[in-house]
Amino acid sequence: MNVKKLLLHRYINNAAIAADLFPNQRYPKQTLNNKFYEVIAGTGRQRLIDKDISNIYALFERFLEEVQYRGRSRPKGAAAPERPQAAVPLRPQEEYQRKYIIRKEQFAGGGWKFYPVHMENEELSYIINQLLEDFSLYGNSTVQVCVRKDRGAKGVDFRIRITSLWDEEVHRNRQYAFGINSNWEVEGFFDHWSDINGKPAAEEIVGRQMPVLEQVLRARATRDWPPVRNKLFDGDNWTCVYEQRDRLSG
Image: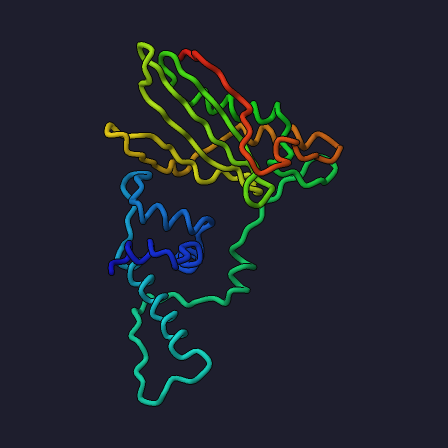
């Protein structure tokens, strides 16, 4: 089994592996994902180099040793597994949680915690308008935007569906989906579409930036009353907050 197949296994937690491989990176999971999917950044394509592969195998060798001899000493005569010199030492789970789970909570004026579910309808509209400005909408297009609270009940998930018509026939269907987590980070920004055979396809848009969030946070910092959760997020279902037909580009 090669490294990529190993990292795709359903039992593997790539976030924990990334934290051990790249302890000096602010976003180690993103670094591992960029190398894994060979994302082009800067002057070239990022890849898993030989040192990365050696370190990954070293982590799993230590894990297997821990499983095999857990609760007792290694039997006499049992050879210790060979490890590359570049092996990365494993850290206790408590140390990982203390050093590598970074909270970036935001506060409204008066010191109140401010989460995405506290956004008012007008603030949601700022985000929607920025997204629509970034999308290329040609001809007659129907746009629908839905929101819901995320699983942690503090962030917000977005879903944007775009249906483009050409000569009164559906020319393409597209859906964008992403979330704004409790730390006000954009995550899981995916572009969904159907290929020429009607087969669903998707691609993650890595490193998506959303400057309008800074605008929302700055405005809230000037208020001195506690944020209130938007009633749109009282339930768990999707709610349509924007719909427009015959939207023309330009």
